[in-house]
Image 1: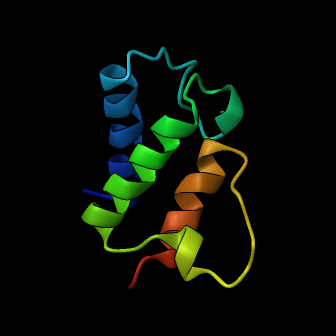
Image 2 (image 1 turned 135 degrees about the vertical axis):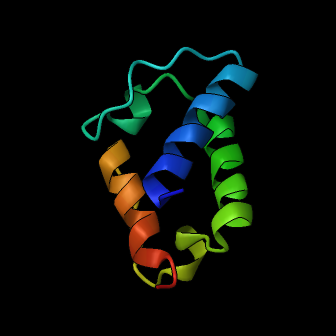
Image 3 (image 1 turned 90 degrees about the horizontal axis):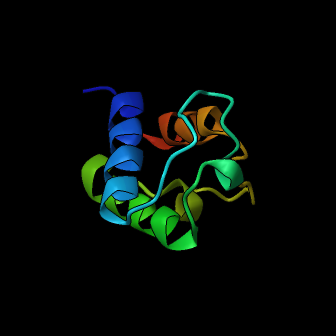
Amino acid sequence: MSIESIVRAEFELVALEQEKRLTGLTDDTVLLESGLDSLCFAIIVARLEDQLGVDPFTASEDVYFPVTLGDFIQFYKDASPA
């Protein structure tokens, strides 16, 4: 399963579990307008760390917060060991 598939699946699963309605998951979806709240994002990041073995928010020396889903996925791709 690709990093993109894993990330998208976690977004959908967390939305379902937290009873949130996603606005749609395109690369251009703005995370703050996705229908998820900060708790949802915390759950997603924790689960992705378990699955992918990396947390790019703590692994990166640069302070960067992805704005769109595409940015978020690329953030994980860039941080993942090759």
